[in-house]
Length: 328
Ligand code: UDP
Image 1 (cartoon, rainbow, N blue to C red):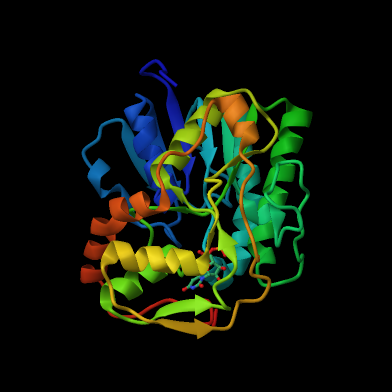
Image 2: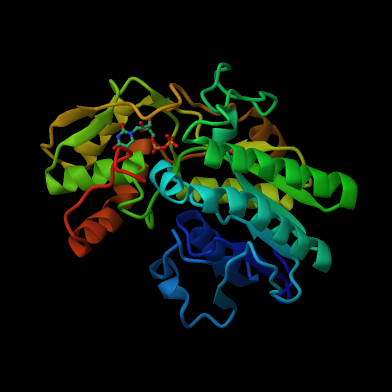
């Protein structure tokens, strides 16, 4: 974005996996950054390396309450639990941050005349009946199922963002993010890559939910951040898919994890969680045409780039594995 040194960005959810990588990228881009996070799922370890960075400030803050971070030029609204295990455990908080928290973030942007980008999600498409998913697809979401606390919160977030754009002329952007992974993911957040990496590195059974034939498309974090920053620089107000269009079955993903870790773990099978989408792959033609963006890191490369992080995290923790079947 090449801003002048006085440009200041607010990142909500700045201590999260993606939020903290975004803080790094903005600092690299010569922004000064204020990150806020209530630390329900975010972790200060993700920001430890910025402790002595004079252009960085962290505030522990519940953004569902009115807050004032001072003048900013850009608001990146990334606060929300994002893994099925986390949002099942914090269901009401997830709905609140998607609604109340979103209004607070939008109000900060409006107050200071800042640009605004929100992290939305492929979950807006639910268990999609259109494949791959284009931004024009309205989705197939169960509004009362266990995933609805996240899916509907994010759909509401998009609606609120478009309303501020239409009624208050706020300069907004909406990124629909698809399964992103990489260093700083919490080992116990229950998502498939941290689960599989942890199980493989511990020599434990790999928990395949269902028959492993369901698909996902995994985007390495550096590609994701590049796409998000390009969208931030653009003037597109309608949603844009930012994800990797290469689709894998969950069984393929497990095989890749075994190869990269050199693990001899076996597979075990658990019930598929309710409403688990059967397939997911972004159509990224809009991002390609509009932003000149496409991802470059293959799943195998991304897993190799993440390996040292996951090894360190496994060494540092107690032996236990999160499961979508644990009581919320
Ligand atoms: N999954 C799995 N084993 C695990 C964790 C997840 O088979 O230990 C499956 C899950 O059922 C889903 C896919 O992997 O089909 C991706 O799950 P994740 O929780 O990472 O994110 P989602 O894309 O469902 O939000």
